[in-house]
Image (cartoon, rainbow, N blue to C red; front, side, top):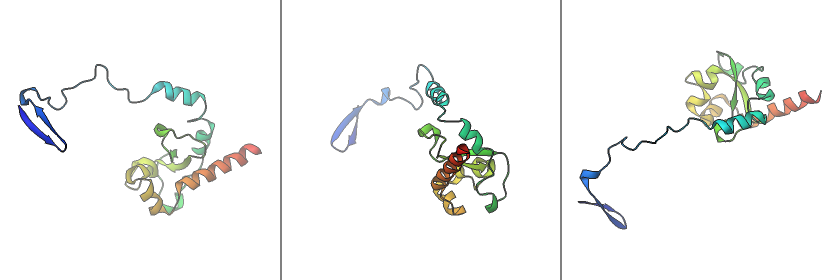
Amino acid sequence: MTKVSIPGSTLRVDPSKRLKRGEIKRSTPMPRENRKRKQKRAVEGLVYGPYHRWIETLPCHIAGKHTCGGRIVGHHVKHVGNGGQDYGNEVPLCSDAHTDSGIAVHTQGPDSFDTMFNVDLKSEALRYATMWDEREGE
């Protein structure tokens, strides 16, 4: 037995019974996504619905500030995996500005991206929602 000192207590560990890294395995692999939740949100129209398709028809939001490349994708300011929806939460970006280059929002992070291009993606996402409302009201 070996004593391991942790502040406030002493733990006895038998070195012959220590687990090696990667020894504990799940009986079934952890799913990469919650399919039931994803399907429910898609049916409710919260993500990847008409608003998302409309966002992808617009030009890249920072087109005049860099050389665009690739197709237009809707960047979710609050990620879908964290409960983000489409409406009022999306900005159109070319794939270079989104994920495919060193200047991409997913490469350098949203705060650095906002500073580099002098934009506020959260307020711009709300502005696109207003544009959508005006478009739908016609």
